[in-house]
Every structure is written in structure tokens, then in C-alpha cells.
Image (cartoon, rainbow, N blue to C red):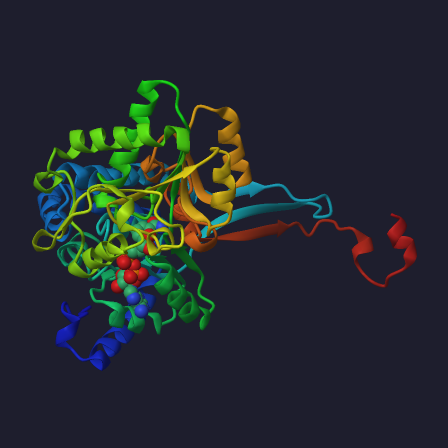
Amino acid sequence: DFQFPKDHESSSSSTASSLIQRDVECMRDYYRSGITKEASWRKSQLKALLSLLHDNQEHIFNALKQDLGKHHVEAFRDEIGTLIKSLNYALKNLKQWMSTKEVKLPKIALLSTAQVVHEPLGLVLIFSSWNFPIGLSLEPLIGAVAAGNAVVLKPSELAPMSSSLLASTIPTYLDDKAVKVVQGGSDIGQLLLQHRWDKIFFTGSARVGKIVMSEAAKYLTPVTLELGGKCPAIVDSLSSSWDRQEAVKRIVVGKFGTCAGQACISVDYILVERKFLSTLVELMKVTISKMFGENPRKSNSIAKIVNEQHLMRLKGLIDDPLVKPSIVYGGSIDEDHLFMEPTILVDPPLEAQVMADEIFGPVLPIIALEKIEDSIEFINSRPKALALYVFTKSKTLQRRLISETSSGSVNINDAIVQYAADTLPFGGVGESGFGKYHGKFSFETFSHEKAITKRSFLTDFWFRYPPWSYHKLQL
Ligand code: NAD
């Protein structure tokens, strides 16, 4: 039986390593038996995941509350509910995704037929991060089992309640010979990377993404890297007050009301025309108060910072003497409760850390530009973002930002909701990562598209065979 130590600290690294070795071999044998390739097996695993979510909803709420202070409604919106939607979508479309596609061939392939079949990749490894510890573990798992793979999932050690909940429930609901959860930190992650995988799907930082990619190179293992970066929001001087309020509501909820800004697709900073700056800041302040009260510290609608180290990192960003004068709202922290107040900065120096690193927390710099079109140059002079948010009714500005900048996605007049779309590829470009998933894209990410051709023996073109003569070129 599979026995990865629950608490890796309690066993030596060599014990963990040999357990991983043994179980990886067992999983490979199991995969080779062909069971996971059956449509019935894939469906049963997806249904089991639905039951897991359904039966354990309260436990998941509690784990997310303890790990990240997420309100149940936020936890349902961003994790449980989104996963149920994705599972239903996968179950509805699996047959069609798995079906063999007939394709055309050039005339030279006389009397031939051709097909594309999707085969599973084999044994795959999924690393997830702590900010949506259930969602970012199970969303790729849906794709991996839908595509018929055996899977090892390593959730993040920084969300320990969620990780241990996944480790205790997944083996009881899913086929435990094909789907395993390994708990642990970077040491266990490193041990896992020493093995041969048929695919590594990684969600996390660019720093660790580089380690994953270089380890994967030893076996030429393909990788998907779902990374982060700084996602800008360009806010045009919207003319109607309704539009302005809606835009600000969507930014505030997408930033402070989504894991307190600890999200890869969070709005990292805003670019705005100087003439609209003061109106925008006032609207932001009013909207934050409406959503989180006059004293957000008392609000139950804002998540906590994952741990002290991250809280101190965020504090350091705004305590920088060059940045401090730019705080126009918030700025306080409560170390005992790992809380950081929604914080707005206006025009912090562009060379400060807060404008260089991904913020990943409830700090929102607003940068004023003379003309909103200057945002194109601003964006193009920085690494490619995972998401670009554009709040404007101007079709020209929308078109220009889509065609003249590069990012994982462009989202017009809203933020974050693109994550929930099964029909859109979710993933980065450049430094925000590569590869894509969600819906059919997840199925494809964990499949190999195999080309099949079938030829009749009946007839053939004689000119494709030697001996060569120039006369054949004239045909
Ligand atoms: P991280 O890179 O520190 O950790 C990610 C995973 O890698 C964890 O499971 C961790 O245990 C493991 N790990 C850490 N060090 C390792 C090592 N040396 N060897 C092997 N494994 C190792 O990232 P994080 O702090 O969990 O997440 C934050 C980052 O993830 C942010 O940059 C954020 O933007 C990004 N992110 C991206 C997405 C996305 O979908 N694109 C989603 C969430 C978070």
C-alpha cells in the first residue's frame, strides 16, 4: 500500500525518497494496466471528485478559514463552486473530447485516411500553491484524470489544513492506486523532481518554476508553468458615474475581496489618466468602506495574509521611506491576526520594490499618466503579465491594448472572472508562464495528440519511388 509519510519531518529524507521511488513504480505499473485509459474510469474519478466536494463542503470551508481566513461565501465562489462547475463541464464534454477526430490528407496520400487520437501522457506530477489551495490542486487534477493519467499531487505546505484535507479525502474517494497526494515542502518537492514524470504541471512562483523546468529537462519532461507577475489595470476616464462605480467595484472585489490580493490574477497596479486620478481614489475609498466597513480589521469579508513572513514582506514594501509618502489609504497591519488593511498608494517611485515585484497582497499602487494611451508603452517596457485589465468604453483603446501588448489574457471591464471560463485557455506568456488549462484545454494539456494514418494497398503513385529522373519533376 501507498504510504507517503503524512508528516515528512518525521521520516528521514532517504526513507521518503525510497517510498516515493517504490510508489512511483507501482503507479507506473498500474497505469500500464490500462485501467485509467477507460472512459468509465475517467468518469468515475470526476464523479468521485464531485462527491468529495459535496460531502466535505464544511471541512473545506473550515480548512480555508484556518489557512487563509476566507469567508465561506468567498471560498464557495472561488474554489468549491468553481470546481463543481468545472467538473460538470468535464463530465458533459468528456465523450466528445475523447472522440477520434477524422482529418483530411493531401492528395499525395492516395486512398488513405487520417485521424487524431488523444492518448494520456502517463504518470503526471502536479504542484500547487497555497492561495487557492483546494481550487488550484483540483482544477488541474480534473484535466489529468479526464485525460486518463495517473497523478501525484503535491499541494503547498503553506496551507496545511487544506493540504491534509486533500491527503485524507482524495484516497478515500478516488482510485488510490492512480491518484496520490504527497504532502511536504520544498524538500519533498525536490525529491519528487528527481523522478521521471510524463508531465509536470506547476502552479507557483517563477523562481521555483525555473527549478522545476531545469529538473524536468533531465528527462525531457514537458512542463506547464502557471506563474504570476504584475497584472495591470488600465482605467480610462469613464464618462458616466455608473460606469465608474461599476469599474471600481469590480477592481476592489478583484483585489481586496479575492484572497486579500494574494491571487496570481489580482490587479497588481492601476494606470490612470492624471485628470481622473482624484475621482478614482475617492471612489476607491468609498467602495472599500462599503465592502469592508469603516474598520476593515473587523470585517469578516477579507482574507488574512498567509503567514508572518508574507505579512512582513508586504509591510516592507510600504515601509520603504520612498514609498511611505505615497500611501493615501490604509497602510496598517495587525500582526496577531495576520491582517493587512486594504492600502492604496498614489504614484510610488517606479524603481521601488512595490513596482518591481509581484505584490501578492492588499496593496494597490495607482500610477498617473498624462494620456491613457501611454499605458501601452508602460506595459510593453515590463515583463508580460498573466492578465491585463482594461476599463474603458473606447473601442479604439480596447483594440489597441489587445493588439499592441502581450499578456496571458485581456479582460475588458472586469477582473478575475476569466478564471471561471471553461471555454477560455487559462495561462501565461513570457514570464507569466506557458501552457494553458481549464475545460478542454486541461484535457489537451494532459494528453498527447497522436497522428494516425491508414493506407490501402490497392494503388500508389509510381513517381515517389526511385530511381529518380528529372522527368518526374515535370509531373
Ligand atoms: P512557490 O513557487 O513557492 O511554491 C509552489 C509549489 O512549489 C509549492 O507546492 C511548494 O511546496 C513547491 N516548492 C517550493 N520550492 C520548491 C523547490 N525548491 N523544489 C520543488 N518544489 C518546491 O509559490 P507559492 O508561494 O505557493 O505561490 C505564489 C506564486 O504562485 C505567485 O507568484 C503567484 O502569482 C503564483 N500563482 C500562479 C497561479 C496561476 O494560476 N498562474 C495561481 C496561483 C499562484
